[in-house]
Amino acid sequence: MRKEELINNLADVERRVQEACKRAGRDRSEVVLIAVSKTKPVEDLQVIYDAGIREFGENKVQELTGKIPEMADDISWHLIGHLQRNKVKYIVDKVKLIHSVDSYRLAEEINIQAKKHGVVVPILIEVNAANEATKFGVKLEEAKQLCEEISHLDAVHIEGLMTIAPNVVVSEENRKIFHKIKDLSVDIAKENIDNVDMRILSMGMTNDFEVAIEEGATHVRVGTAIFGERNYNI
Ligand SMILES: *Cc1c(COP(=O)(O)O)cnc(C)c1O
Image 1: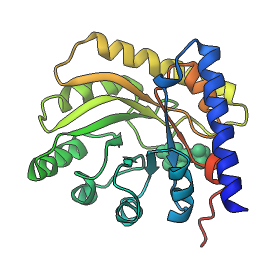
Image 2 (image 1 turned 180 degrees about the vertical axis):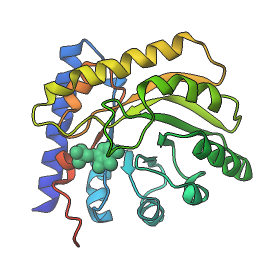
Image 3 (image 1 turned 90 degrees about the vertical axis):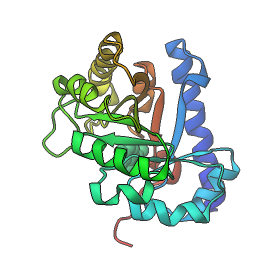
Image 4 (image 1 turned 90 degrees about the horizontal axis):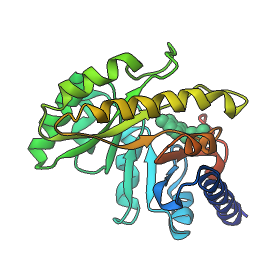
């Protein structure tokens, strides 16, 4: 049965999160598990919600705004996918955190829309850690400067960094990438830039969330391991 399958998947992911925390000498409370529910029906989200999860991640604005009214209002929604400037207005007051800011122009638009809605929007800077041509995100060496520029916008607040590591077969291969991002966040934190915090590191997905936790992730974004494979053709 679908419900049982989802509950078992979630329990398995939770156990693996706990074990990774233990190996790293970290407390479980230091890691937020975000259930990435893109392409999945709200019935599936409801099962995971009923099992106790309150943090959900979506990568498309339209899907996100469609699901929000269908679900309980104590959910924290995370926008984790690439965000176009013309769509910022639809989500700016509805999400807990935007993970995917990789340009000043996007941050500026978030700032404008945030002011219109009377909110301050927490954001992460997306870093393209492995410099992959197919990925969004700023280069590692550009992240600090982007933080400085965005820090002057008073209706956005940088809370940390996000990265999508390469899709590798052996998760261990991404350890050095996660380590680099952790180092970068420590580096930026040392600058004590006004209006910039480095308390969040959003990294680790189904294939590599345990390694990410061992390397300091505070938020892992797990889809497939909870909801099963995605079918983009339906
Ligand atoms: C889809 C997605 C995830 C989850 O990926 P899985 O491999 O299914 O866990 C995490 N982060 C982002 C940005 C995504 O788009």
